Amino acid sequence: MTTHQEFHRRSVDEPEAFWAEQAQAIHWHVAPRQILDYANPPFRRWFVGGQTNLCYNAVDRHLAARGDQLALVAISSETGVTREVSYRELHAEVNAFAAVLRSLDVGRGDRVVIYMPNMAEAVFAMLACARIGAVHSVVFGGFAAHNLALRIDDATPKLLVCADAGMRGGKVIAYKPLVDAACAEAASPPPRVLVVSRGLDPDAAMTPGRDVAYAPLRARFDGAQVDVEWLESNEPSYLLYTSGTTGKPKGVQRDVGGYAVAMALSMWSIYDVRAGQVMFSTSDVGWAVGHSYNVYGPLIAGATSILYEGLPTNPDPAVWWGICERYGVRTMFSSPTGIRVLKKQDPSWLRKHDLSALKWLFLAGEPLDEPTAQWVTEGLGKTVIDNYWQTETGWPVLALMPGLDLQPVKFGSPGLPMPGYNLRVIDDQTGADVAPGEKGVLVIQPPLPPGCMTTIWNDDARFVASYFSHFNELLYSSLDWAIRDADGYTYILGRTDDVINVAGHRLGTREIEESCSTYASVAEAAVVGVHDELKGQVPVVFATLKQGGTGETSGEAAARIQQRVVEQLGAVARPARVYVVNALPKTRSGKLLRRSIQALAEDRDPGDLSTLDDPGALDEVRRALGRGADAGG
Ligand code: ATP
Ligand code: MG
Image (cartoon, rainbow, N blue to C red; front, side, top):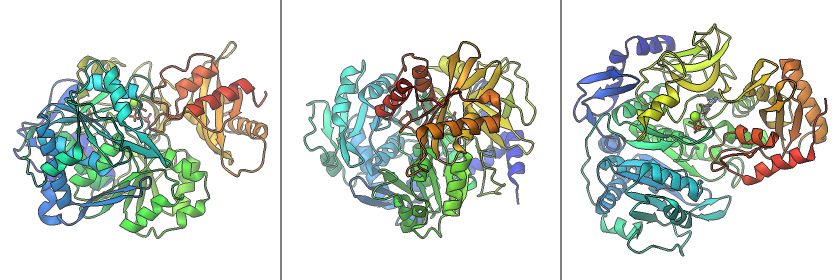
């Protein structure tokens, strides 16, 4: 058996041989004539001259062997509708959708913005674009009109596909007025808007000449067959904007062949899902996880993908586990934020269903603190695997590979380097590799492996400046701090712009947050550095407490949190203030908006709030600061 370490070593020592082998997992209309072209660093091209198609690999390829198998199950606890779609039905839906796109004059290389919630048609639309070589750009349905307008102007789409409405917590959120506002704001609005109605907003106004309803077109093109457009491996497949946690989102551009190969490899080796098995990712299609592990990964693998629209607690906090039982889910993929929502509830909800088919729970998107990892591992009695990646990389950089050779889980670490990632941890000042156990910046020695971004859409210069210009050597900076231990396990300490400098000591916000969350009544903690005359910066904590806690007052909890940090990290990390709040400001993708919290704590403008999820959470922070509740000391 190949060990994890051997597999990885070969992938970085002999990348061309390694990836040539992996490339055999997908269908090529024309085989690549060159595996890697790295003549123009940091740009690289994988599988040069190869011709393939993502839709063909995700759909057509499986028709013969598994036409009646479920390809997609779209479950909405908001509308109460579950839609089960076999590979044969998926093929029919995607062909009809592709015919509709063609009828609206969309062709190879044209951009299509998709603004829809987690519903089956969002997947049909993505695959239909892939089929005809159009470049989709899915914009998370929770984004407001302004965010949508910014992305429209960057992608300059020929068509926008939207739903009439989404739903959240039982409330209908009409999308069409948001689309209208975005089109009004955008400098280059799409000439056509295709509206897929679920009947949630029957009064949605249609602009004559621009807007078209999907249903009549779908009926007109029922039974249509649309030829697959064979694309050169390096043509763009889709654009996806980063979450915007740290600033203006970047239009990550993905290729065709490299992405398909990376998806195929990651599905069996990392997620341990093969043809005929079932994967359930709770992500939204608008995020990187949704693209890779709700749509392309599972379908390229011939697996069944479950798409879920709704809250993790509706109709009850066992809803996800009920889905696992019903469909025999083997691998579940969610986020630490999702689990922390459940952690506020009684752990007995984790045991309400028969989870005998479930093998793995993967979590990604932000740091997985040890207490949360422990809580869910014990509660489910399953192996929980943290995995670290970025929208830019499209698939995990750090994880474990239970499908190949499962190395031990170490809580607090997303594990070991994934195939093709030649990772280093280097000193941010000198650029030298740091010793095991020392902190540095996590970098990828280029060329980036297949699946990773090829550039920033329309902005090669920004691609180089954002990621490859931080050191004397040409290295991809992850912009995240990390420590690697003697066994090669890597720990992520937070973003390079999330560092607190206390009297010359550099502390990662993550370390202090981790320490706070070991205090039993803490549900979640955010730590920011706040300007201090004497010390330069001091750590300030904002924490939410678990429901039905211990009955201690906020002041008592704050004091104990402060004490906990001093015990664990020393007096230098002592939080100057600890505020207990009811909610923490996060992005729509569930990441803490530390830069806005910090700005408020320093009495500055909170900055760009376009990705903020719940404005009420920001008010909570303001209220807490105004109240001046602090732990003293
Ligand atoms: P932007 O780049 O626009 O500021 P973003 O970085 O939040 O937004 P994503 O690409 O969605 O956008 O997030 C990737 C980042 O999320 C990583 O760089 C890292 O900071 C964090 N992250 C993801 N997974 C993990 C993990 N398992 N452990 C720790 N951090 C993680
Ligand atoms: Mg980022």
